[in-house]
Image (cartoon, rainbow, N blue to C red; front, side, top):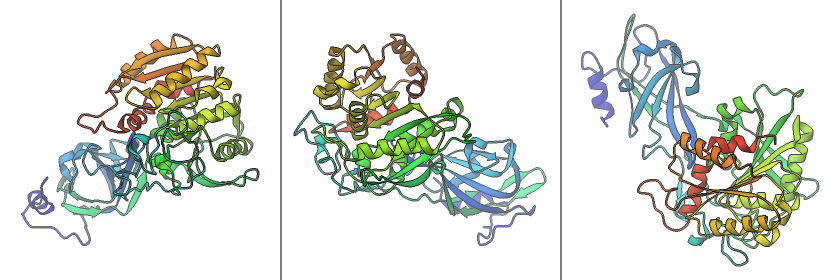
Length: 455
C-alpha cells in the first residue's frame, strides 16, 4: 500500500502537494464530508466503505477504484450514489462510495478482549471454560456460561470506524479535480441504524429489558405483519443494547432490504444482561418477560398474533426451545441454531414447526439435538434429516433446501458436515464448531423464508 505522501505526489499534475487544510477544487466542487460505512456479517460488524459527499454530482465514468486510497485498506470499487447507502448506486451522484474489502485484516470492528480471549469476548462454548462461554451442555453439570439469571457483561465491544480517504486528481468533462484528503466525521451502520431502541418494564415479572425493534418501512396499521424474535448467545450478554445487532446476522438478516421486499415484517432483538438459559435446562424470568414484551407489541402495532416466530443461537436457541415447551401454541415456527435441551422435557413441542441446524463439530449441540429429535419422533413427530456443507454457495443451499422441503415434515433437522463450518486456516479447537454454526446459519435465505411461511 503506497503511503499518503507517495500517492499524492504521483497524483498531482506538477508534482507539488496540494493543501489539505481547506480542499477547494478548480470547478468550485468541494469534498464536504465523509461517512464511515459498516455492515454486519455472519461474524459481526465490519468497516466496508467510506461515502464521500461532494458539492456537485460526479459521473460513474469519471471514477475508478485506483482514484482513492485508504491507509491499510484495499479499495475494491468507487462509484456515485444518491445517498450514503451503497444500495443507492447511480450513474451520477453527489456521493461517491469508496468500497473497502471486507476481508482486510482491519475490516472487523470487534474488539478483542484479553480477559475473554476472543473477539467481542464471546468465547462461546463450554469446552473452553470461563464466564463468557456459551456452549449448550448435555444436561446437569454440563458446563456453560453460568446459571440462569446470572447478570454479566461478556465484554462485547466494537471499535468506532474512522479513516482518511485520499482522492487522486480526477479528470472531469469540464476540467480537473485536484487531489485531496478528507477524514470521516460520522458513521452509518447499514441495517443496524434502521432499528429503534426501547426499554420494556414488565409489570408482571418486574424485569427491565432493553430491546431493538425494526418497524417495516411504510408501516400501515391497516395491514397485518409477522414478527420475528431473535435472541443472542451468552457471549453477547451485557448492557450494550446494540450488541445483539452487531454480533451477527441473527436479527439483521430479516430486516434487510431483500427480505423486507419479500415479506415486510417486524424484527425484535432483545438485549439480555443476564444468562437466560443454562445447561441445567433452567431459564431466567426473562422467558416470561420476553413473551410479555411480544404480547405488548402485538397490542401496540398491527402484528398478526398467528404469525409470531422465534429464533436464537446457542443460549438464545435454548431459550426458544424453553418457550416452545412452556407456550407450545405461541410461535408459528422456530429456527433453532447450535442449541439443545433436556430431551426428557421436549414433548410439548412435538407438534410445532421447527428448523434445527447444528454442526457435527459442535460437541454438545450435535448429540443434544440428536437426542431431542429422537424424543420428538417418539411423540409422533415426523423429522426430515439432511447433512449440508457449510461451504456451499447460495445456489447449492437453495437446491439442498428444496430437497429437504419436499419431504413435507414439520420438523427439519440439518447438520453441517464435519469440518465444513470452518474458514480456511481458521482455528478449529474448542468451541469453534459451535460458534461458526451461526456465522453461516442466518445467511441461508431459504431457511429465513421458511420461517415466515404461513402454513
